[in-house]
Length: 350
Image (cartoon, rainbow, N blue to C red; front, side, top):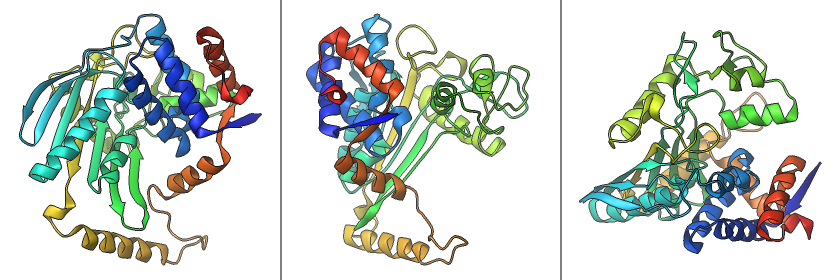
């Protein structure tokens, strides 16, 4: 059974709970923004229903409520930020805003963050660039959850990679992929639902493909998408993030949530490109619209037309803004627990 809550009400609830657990109000607002971005676009595995996942490590002292976020290097089109070992939402948001500002001055802005934690849905950050009429890219390394092709052990993170480009009057083109076939969040979702998973999603402790989500979580590993192709992209992200920033990488990386104790130790990389350095913004928009129109006009087997990356999510965001954000029974239980602990009324209970 699911219930629905108004987006603004859920955002306010999340912000208040994060403040009660010790976060600064502005930082709590940023985290609530990013979680709402995910919920609206239908990425519930990274949305407001997962708020306990981020609150509990702060409440136990595993993650700092108010990390010291500092700029380590700032030189023309590039910068490096230290996230202070806290959640990644705030420093990642700051990094993309810095990248956008740099792109307006230099044509391109590249800002990395090290010593930080989980930053939520990767697409959040290119969307910030798109809002400023820029092309944006974001990626992060993560806990080693993915096995190299042919290996039995976890080798590298699923290392999400996201890209966004404005498309004039069309929804932005937004690609958000993990380097694994499926994220660990989706594996956990399947376990909670008592569902099986496709055999190409992960392997068990013996390196064999499995449909049992528990076998993947307990001693197994995620499978890279496309075999060596996904593994190669994961290595690229690892180079841009953990290795190039001087941060944690490979087996030393963790996001500071349920996989390991202590402060976050992953890194993010943000890129913003000012398209007006190549051609006028209106020309870029027209060309994007024309390209998408050609895609939509293609003859398809189903007759439904080609769906471009970000189209479904944009449509879902419009619907959920009107109809509310769905919450599962398990999510409501977790949020109700936070409501009781921190004295913040839960919108779904009203």
